[in-house]
Image (cartoon, rainbow, N blue to C red; front, top):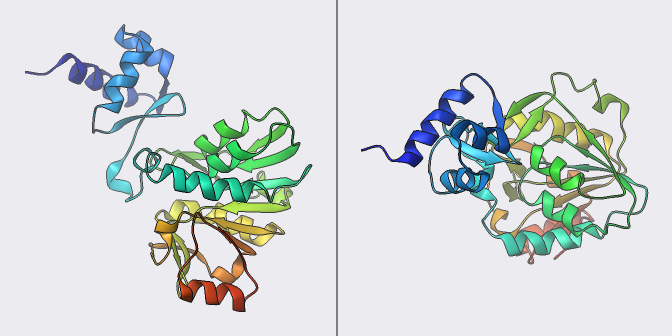
Length: 252
């Protein structure tokens, strides 16, 4: 017999066929339950409906091997360690590009609330972190929303990004390999990542140690594109040797 939770999930799926997202408060009103009940339903349900940044959305699991909701609870302390180191590289009044992914919000969290800066982003979770910083001027690059990795893919890079030149860029990756470079799961992310790699002045790759030696389908670029690689622990000898030979700063 279908449980009440399953009935509520079914109603949300039906509602999301007419709209790309529902605010948590709207979802609770639709189901005539509390917001806490909606959160509990979604957290305990392995299905296509997820909660992203206060919004209920459909998550197309068949579209990608990377799901931000799956990744956000993995290796949290390792991501925080790398993020704290990366945050020290941001200077007052700089313009910074922040990539998507689950490590990037920890970088923003580690930035002092007293530091004035401009943050450029194209993902929902990164935007939500930036808007919590009282002295941050936030620039969100809009476009088509992709729920699986919570990014907005710009319809044209010239709309906003063509007018910007960041001082520093913080990148995430799902794979870091001396031969194949920095890679990620989603091709949708490449246009904005590679825009930043062309236009920013200083490039910082921020990854936890589990990404070393991995190769994913979407190639960002050679490791020599980055000025610094930041992680929670020391890379292996091959990657360390490459960094030393190419004058890439290693922070761990």
